[in-house]
Image (cartoon, rainbow, N blue to C red; front, side):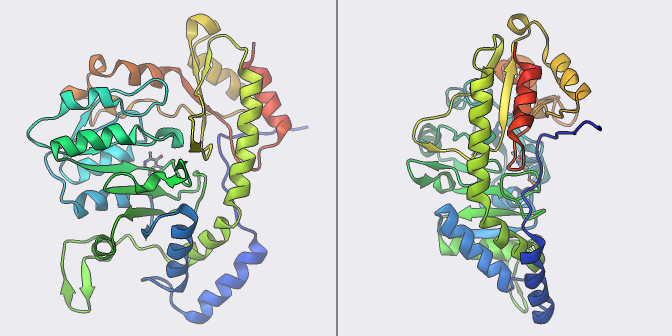
Amino acid sequence: MEKRTITVTSPLLPSLEEFIPLLKDIWKRKWLTNNGHYHQELEKALCEYLGVKYLSLFTNGTLPLITALQALRITGEVITTPYSFVATTHALWWNGIKPVFVDVDSNTGNINPDKIEAAITPRTTAILPVHVYGNPCDVERIKKIADTYGLKVIYDAAHAFGVKINEKSILEYGNLSTLSFHATKVYNTIEGGALICNSAEEKQHIDYLKNFGFAGETTVVAPGINSKMDEVRAAYGLLNLKQVDAAIAKRQHIVQLYQDGLAETKGIRLLKDMDGIRHNHAYFPIFINEKEYGMDRDSLYEKMKSQNIFGRRYFYPLISNFATYRGLESAYPDNLPIANQLANEVICLPIYAGLEDEDVKSIIKIIAR
Ligand SMILES: *Cc1c(COP(=O)(O)O)cnc(C)c1O
């Protein structure tokens, strides 16, 4: 029998039986994009599900980052984290902004608030943190620093769909937050994303920006971009929203299996669930201490691969170690010891709603000692 291949993630798919009638309806309406029926319905449904007031849909999760920086007219330098997906820093670069990397907290992988103040200069205008693996940043500390120094805060919340802090949406912190609905994320619209803001006026401006800056048939109010979500993806997104809670519950169950199965293994560190948080279990990272485990991360990664288990080294290499950014002063590894350590120790294990218990158990068997 051929051995099953297990990848780190597998997309949450709506049922075709339910999708086809919606496609037929879109064909009948002949309105394919530009704030159509399903686009409006999905914006409403997401606001309700996520517990936010103002959300604009986008074609992916990178354009809301680029657009957020435009919306707030961010310039100069922005303090950010190297422990993320490259899109976070690329968004700054595409706006002609200099990224300033600061180190992360080893308990969460999130930007370390203790390190932010030392990185502020007269050119600093904002902070761009990431809620890594869906674990909330220290939002209160970051707010205090931002308020003190007059900085804006944009959260890359690409991993944090549905995450809440004491019942409050994580997306309500900071000036703006962005989401990704890429096929690999907890909730997907194939490609897609969103920008969450705090007022109707801000949403109006963001909606102008994502449609070339058009504020009417003949009026352009800003150098906008095109990042509108189309009707087919919006309809797909409406269907997927109905099953995302069940998918998160299944992820929670897998997390429990991993935690029970790996707790006793020396040299494998797991992240702790945080108090008062509604987690989405977007990822399940483990960190391998070579000395204690008796094998380095890459050897374990290859060993898993040889048995058809494809984990992912999120995030490796660090953004600050890519050719584009490594020349920046703040990118030197000496400035980022914890981020470099996490990048060298991490493997994200397979986790998705369709993963079977026996698959999880076989993965544990390969890793546990
Ligand atoms: C996925 C992701 C993005 C980019 O989202 P896309 O929808 O792929 O453009 C941005 N930031 C982080 C942290 C991500 O994981």
